[in-house]
Length: 268
Image 1 (cartoon, one colour):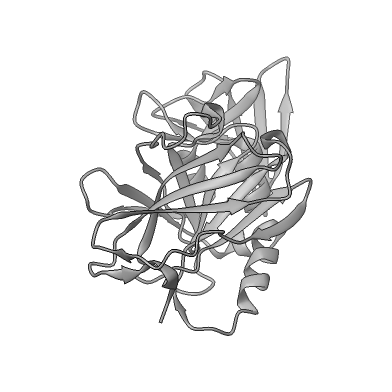
Image 2 (cartoon, rainbow, N blue to C red):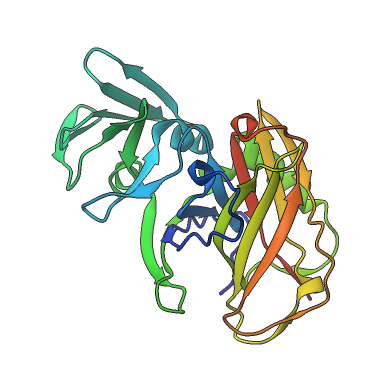
């Protein structure tokens, strides 16, 4: 399963968060990740995406609008959000199944909600309104389902454009598939934030742990830092097996972290 360069593929899936450190921050451990052209969004502030009771993916308006390059406003009194991109305008109200697209009203199959003072959007409905193509894939191994979203606008501006340009300078040859994240946690015992990522080998063959060159980027206050794993073990990772990598960052607490992006690669 390969990802075509400059083609946005956003992958959404439910994963079981594995508690491999008793002192991690539970609030920062995400159970739902997005993938944009190979870049997994493992963490976003102020809250991570989640699946609601209607089995719909809900994403924070702030995260979606910033990564998509849209303009978003929110009216506190009416609890109404407006999102604009190009010649399209969307209006949604918390706990209402009505969405307005360029002034035309349609019915949703779930409702936007306010969660910890964040406005959450139903991803599928918003994607349809902005004419972003979606589909569903099965990553295998039982529970790992994906929703793919294809649209190049996500890589044309903002932090993902900068990260993609940074990664494009890497001249080594890698496969940008075959490793699938299953859990993210933050270690609170350090003077600095250390990110722990567990991933599954989905290549269908054994791989060398040393050949997994996973890029991790932390975005804080609009500044991007690439962090490197401090794990140097030379292990064989079998088909379907889990590997764990640790990434020390420059951040002193998790509240400083706006986004964590993960780009798993396997050396050719």
